[in-house]
Amino acid sequence: MRSTPEQRPQYDDEISLVDIAATFIRRRRIFYAVFVIFTLGGLAYALLATETYQYTSLIQVAEKGSGKYIEEPATTIATLENRWLPEQETIFRAETDGKLPFSVSFSNPDNTGLIRFTSEAASDSKREVELVHSNLIDSIKARQNALLEREKQSLQSRINSVERAIETLQGGEDTGAAIAEAFERKVRLESDLEALKPAEVLVVSRQSADKTGPARVKIMVVTLFIAGIMGVLSVFLVQFGGSVRTALKTES
Image (cartoon, rainbow, N blue to C red; front, side, top):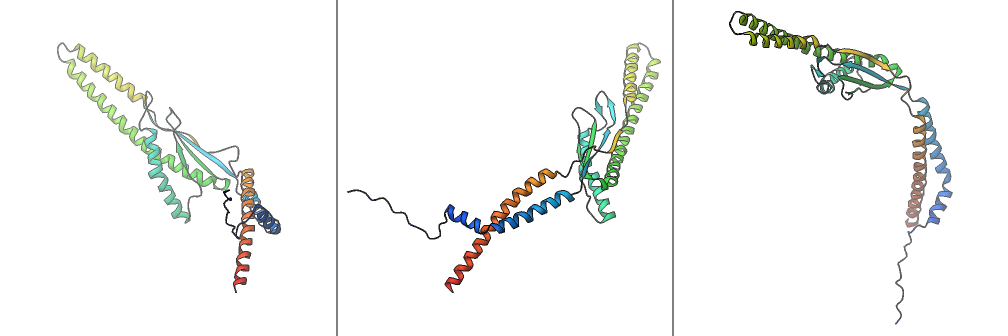
């Protein structure tokens, strides 16, 4: 016996590509309307969006000499992120009853003692950016100066101790080697004391020459993409709603 091909069930609610194309053509005015509305909205945003600039500050942390620092830049950055910046945000909110209109990021360029502050803000926020950056720099300087003064006192105390030891040794016998070693230690300590350098502010809130935003071309490309999707979606949502209403009328 010859086997008969298996019969596939037919469903009344199946939609072919022809039906989809026909639906889209019938409802094309909805697509055009939605597409134009979204495109005009994106164009308005791209044209009216506030121009922004990048603001940069740089500070060199205090040094102990030989590539060593009074406090490691990473530790200072952690303090900036978790203490001093939140304090500035709280102060700004208390004074203006609003959120700080820009963010501040921190970085430490490789193999340097530099800490870089970066903010992106509109030109009319330049004063606020400069104020926040300056306050953060002042916090760093105050801490660095305190640590530097502590290091100076420690080195000076050790130098004084060595000097007293030398005076004691000079009155004894066979103390030449000990005195020479003490003098060598004193020279090293004095060298370390002279190598101390305080924190140095290099740049405060320098505005970039070029604008950083808005990216109008990118905004329009994304807008056209979204407008096309929303236009197509609106066509089939309207068609679906019409089909539901027709089915309800038929049942009633």
